[in-house]
Length: 484
Figure (spheres, rainbow, N blue to C red):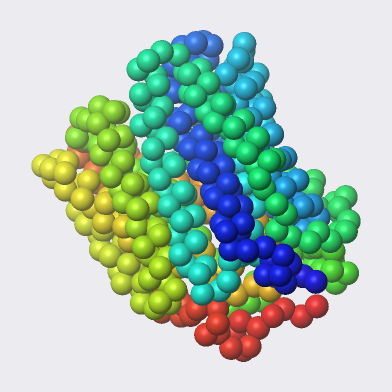
């Protein structure tokens, strides 16, 4: 009996909803934690007497850990029960949060963030895999809409929550606020959560874990260094070279293991056409989204003279709008499929990029906010169908690997998008400044080229959106199951 048969024969719909609800709340808390730290960096620098470059490691180390651990979840979710994986994820997250709240030194705080990230990396693949195992095909769009709401609202609320807690006192309040919630969810999950899968005794490959570290760690780290004026130019080149070489070795190893049906991260997901198209669009979308998240706050503060709190409040409506639209888009997906939703939304995102490339010092701030809200709404109409299409076309035994693949690609694409925006922006800003332009004008000219570059890449996503189909609409020629 496979996982789908077990789910349909052994549980009623109410129990399934309870399982998913627990996982959704847990995912919201761990994702909320990701964005609370950015606002608190200056306070932490003062508390421990560290430089900005050192403090940034609290974010960089979190991102690196996510990139390294997420590929491991494909094996974990196949090898262990749902309840065991949940307990592992929330225990790691809670332990890291407790250590961070009490950290006596910066080094201990950094280690705590790594422990937190290890738990966070497991949670999203666990949630998506469980949804695909428990929810029938006709209801997956709506459920993925709920997941999109969590993914969108939590990062948007994070900086605002952090700002409020910092107004009340120490940066430690951030972790102290999250810890009891995390512990309560852990206790509730241990009490209520039931297993949604049938584990297989897949052996752990001794080469794959170190190759994961060598591949994804340097790759994300190298991308994060691009455009940083404080870093020697050789560092990102060496890191990216190591990452590409490690990635090649990792892929070669998985091909060997797939022949024995023992892959650590099964790449046969890419044999399925619907998965390939959706993942390609997802990667481009994450590049665009992360790049915009970096660029807009910088422009709003440096060019338009807004305070950080004002910038956070301006960006909040877009994130909330994306979250509110998630379940609505999910229900629409179940009715009309992905292409009707994604293709028009892709064109709106392209139009926003063009609009942002024409910003001037006299552009009113509210117009920038409207552009961000339009982009956020359009991403809501994009990401929910893409998640559903990507995982919905996979056979049951590959869903956990597909979830891990999506999470890994999101991390790498986000880092790549940030690097693309920052590099183009820095080069063009320097060129404009050397030509005699003032600081604000030079920054705007640099951002124009960055947004135009993002728009040029996004054209590929617009073209790919025309090829999207619901998994049940895909024939064996494009979406058939991979060979065993």
